[in-house]
Image (tube, rainbow, N blue to C red; front, top):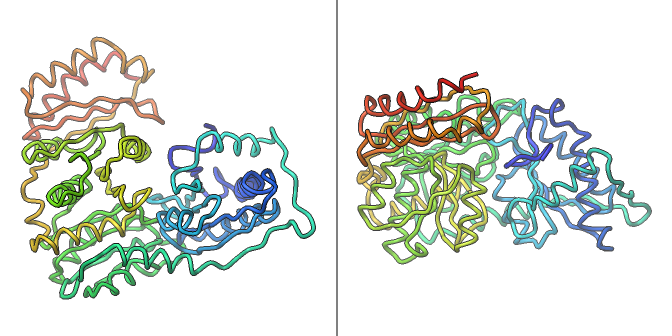
Length: 445
């Protein structure tokens, strides 16, 4: 598609993504779900803390009401809060203004269908056609013009949903939270306070420009230092729109998405709550995670990189747990998308029920060293399909003798071939990758 990628329409604010784009998206969505069906559409909209989010929110709402829809404003809220409220409030669709973990200079518009999932591609294609002037949409007039509704109650219901999902107390637990100066700033602390935790919080003062700046899940080292310095039991770091979560154990060690999948997968399996005893990671998850699952008899079904592929697999087969190394974790029995705060609650459920520290729960997993090499090529399709390159990958894996792997894939957006090796030592990673890199020399740009 021309404007919408795998995670919405994203770009530099007022350069790649402009208020005109936002207004037109609102115009089309308001008409498509309302006047087109001879009814008044109800659309719920949230945003993160970027300065430009207020501008895009206003443009979207102007477009919605101009086409006759009623716009319900959640204000600052995590992306999964919009997904939850679409279903809970029975809205026609939802809109989130956020560029997730990107810098404040970027922004994005994400659309959610009435089932709480990413918007159907055929609808996005229609929106793009309207943006490009290929179709026309009538303006509402008279009493058909829509209205705006201050919908703070929706955010409160989302917070209540998170609290009610936790049937345990966090009394006596010292928990650190890094809110990335983003959407979690309005939600995370009230949730953990309600559960009785002793909450220690950093990066919870958004000013429009400091979202993701040296904080949150993209700069986990700050939370690691904070946890150790303050003698905390655990720490959680979110990204800008709080749909991702990384954790830090009591020793200050990173607990990434792979380790979270292990801790939660093992816990859910033990209590009969892991459907088909299967977890859905991506092909980029660490080889050590797969070995650890093998040792305890948990199955896994890998997907291509990208949360939408994880979603699709889970929905199709009814699995209850999946996610990415980046901390985008989905609990299919509780939600329709990744939710960083929900992820931190599920980790704490395992910690409290098992009466073990987070480091102890992670101990059975030995993550393998990784080496990732990006090779710029003339034609990524030709490079990826070259039999000589495929043979090199095979030889590299034979070198590791079943105790590691080599993964090669083309970038979806750049003329790059990515080569990833995992093995017990960095030397073995390097040796395996060099075999593949030599074969790719003929394709270098």
